[in-house]
Amino acid sequence: MIKSVEERSVGLKVQRIQDQIADMIRERIIVGEYDRGQRLKQMEVAKEFGVSATPVREAFGILEAEGYLLGSSHKGAMVPKLDKTQVVEIRDLRLLLERELTRHALAHLDDATLAAARDVHERCAEAIASGDRIGVRRLNYRFHFNFYQIAKRPQTLEFVRVLWAKYPFHDLDAIEQRQSRMQQEHENFLTCVESGDREAALEAMQQHITKGWHEVFDD
Image (cartoon, rainbow, N blue to C red; front, side, top):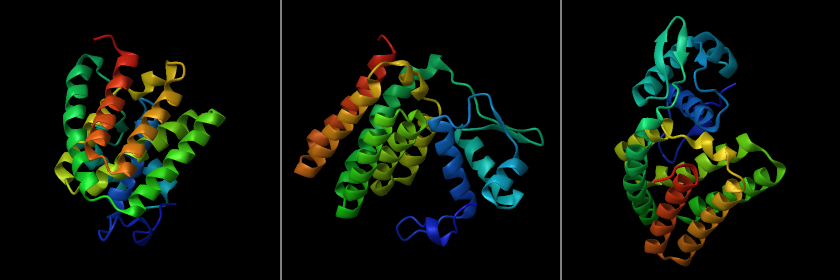
């Protein structure tokens, strides 16, 4: 059952139920719990989360607008397959927009957010060690967006969510030792943040995105 609105508040802003559901579906698509090409039916999702069909229908509408789902008819919404002809443009946009989100997030960083990032980082190491592929994907997603959400740039954040919906993260699974290298890149970023070197932290984040790209595609 979905957590109560009070339990899933973000800072001082309380999320609507449909936004909570959209968050969870979005994450499941990114990490691969819902397959590309899979159809999601409103009533089945509502039953799974323990809510009525209305907030699920509204969540589907949010995700369709972002590109995470296609269609919302009685047959259900489909998780779209990736169009790899667009990935160069998507990479370039990720580099541009995620740099801005990181820069603004660093300006608003507090001890609690940094401690939470360290916790996610450590749990990701455990997931890598245990071979939990889905867990690693989920924690990578949370590592990034826990930072991005404090940037106070909601429009940019929305655009980046759209880009993540279209990015071939799953291709990284086939690359030997990519998860371990990803973990080291996260560590480099955190080390720069903790030392107070914002420019180095920005560069570390850019390198992280770029290195992942180069391990999948030949420029």
